[in-house]
Image (cartoon, rainbow, N blue to C red; front, side):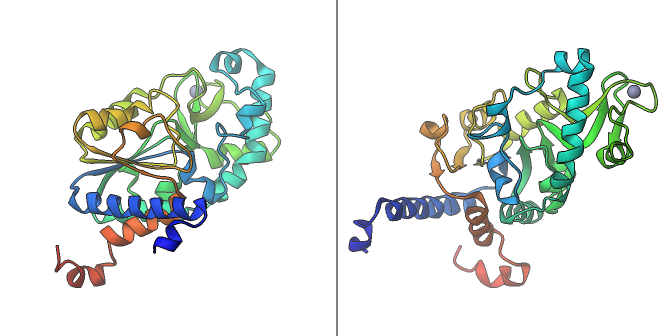
Length: 279
Ligand SMILES: [Zn+2]
């Protein structure tokens, strides 16, 4: 063991991640209400690009603002061209081990809510209860009329794009349509934010997964949980501004880490009876 510890720094990092995972499992076993907070890092393993991360599309090209979108027909046309080309891949993405692990923890009652910054719908696809997935930035699978507020299914609008409608409008009022997601400079949906704050305040373990915790106010939620007495754990490939107040920090991939966490806390139902004797 000592010889191994003196080996490459990569191996040391692995050792630290292993020790941190063991600590997370200990904390998790004692937690009654775990709330997960997920960001782009949980979905990159499903092939969803991190638009805001290093090398992401918004690093090369400024994202549209809502004012620009409302006023400029060319911005809207560009947007729908981008959607027509990009939506099929998003729609075809499948949940990875991280999403599946969180769904399993939710079904077993360990995870009471999932707060997500993602718009890809992969938590629901993995089997998480849609009523307990709080989508802070909205969903790419819904399209909203900016005038009357009617929500349309993205698949339905996508068919219109494929049929040659390059600027789809609301069939009820003729208003401009946009995916029901948050643009830069827009406030978060009040209902979702309120639900998220309630979840953060009432949990005893806040588990951050794959978020660099930079985009406020969402990034404030784990700090709120910590201030209210919860244990704060962060699983992310890179450092975050909240690492210094976190109780557990794991620098590793979300999928494999969550799979092992779930296996420890929510073993297959057939094994539950035999596994609980020591605790
Ligand atoms: Zn409308």
